Image 1: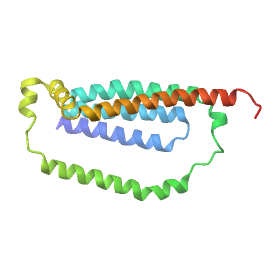
Image 2 (image 1 turned 90 degrees about the vertical axis):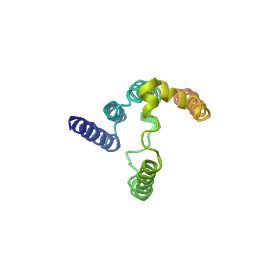
Image 3 (image 1 turned 120 degrees about the vertical axis):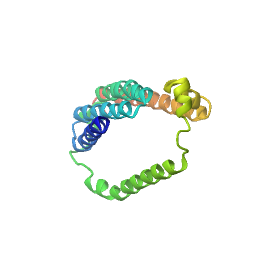
Length: 177
């Protein structure tokens, strides 16, 4: 019973933080709300018994990605990069059906995944080896290629952010066209 209360508290915290990410227009507040959401999601993982995933959530997302966003926020000259104070509300309203379809797809995959997965397939391995060893063995055997592709995508994103930061600084450094 206490696990459910803690789980629901973290879930409510994540939902409120997600709404804060969407509603605020100041980039600093958005990063703070995103950090709050990432910490609450890590709490959900800890309550669910996935300690490794919760720790990785804190280390990778809550620390590294948030610091990366702060770096981008400080590197880009926002006063010249931003257009007028228009929020693309029509685009947001038009994208609502797509978002609802994605949520429907996630719910369908979740329901079908629960029905398709055998009950307790990894429980014996987790009891024998531990949570970290089981995740590592599955990640580096069955999903090794996907793991490496994700690392390359993150590397390309970091290189792109550095290049964009340099171009923005060179472009806006002088006032001559």
